[in-house]
Image (tube, rainbow, N blue to C red; front, top):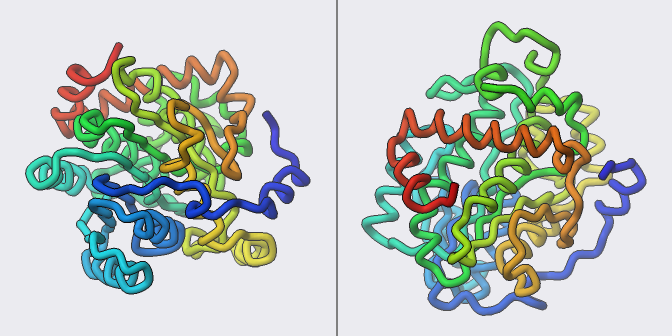
Length: 334
């Protein structure tokens, strides 16, 4: 599928139902939302808070901002089962600590919403040495999903929601993803071609393409005995802090046609709780509908890239966190 400007505008102004109109009770269920102290994540967290969850965990990088967000959501929704927990998906150490704490204190997870991400226009690296768009949006997201997998598989109808974007349609020369060790190539200081060379806007687009490919491949490795559903979601072009470092013209355009973060958050919550999506896995969602992803994603080259990226991701994460390899061997199908 290709996205034209007219299609983009039609999507932007689509009317999206509020989750309260279709969502079931979340009584007794545990929900984790990353990056929930601001923007889309903060708005998304308020919807499940109104559905009486057993526990709603805001996984945030900054402890104080996480606590403030939890306090605010409790005041606004009246839900007392909201708590904040520290998690920085840019850090392997933080990811491991979060998973270990979850194992000791909770042990079962019903819904994981992977909302946290960045849009970094300049070449910057995480403390673990990865270019931030790739290291956070892809590797951090994959790392968390894999570490939380054992807890998700204990739930009766678990879901993983990965925040993607319609900008994955705009990735230039996406065929560049179909090569061996592409993540290392994108992270190298000695890029050998235009695709690998750092370009802020394109690198973000690439990271969102990785989200779609990886979410689809993860769904293929979930054991058939589990009802775990994995989806990637386009929240639309929203007015949020994600664009704070982007060029002025893009921020102006954002304010002219952007959705509010509350409206955008409805797409995330729809993927997490809508009864109509039960049993639907490996899907890409846009405006609360299953939508065909980019032509590259569905192409033969895209499917080949998906498998290479899956294998490289497991190798990279397994080297820094052996538990990832253990989870893949014990809980995933080959």
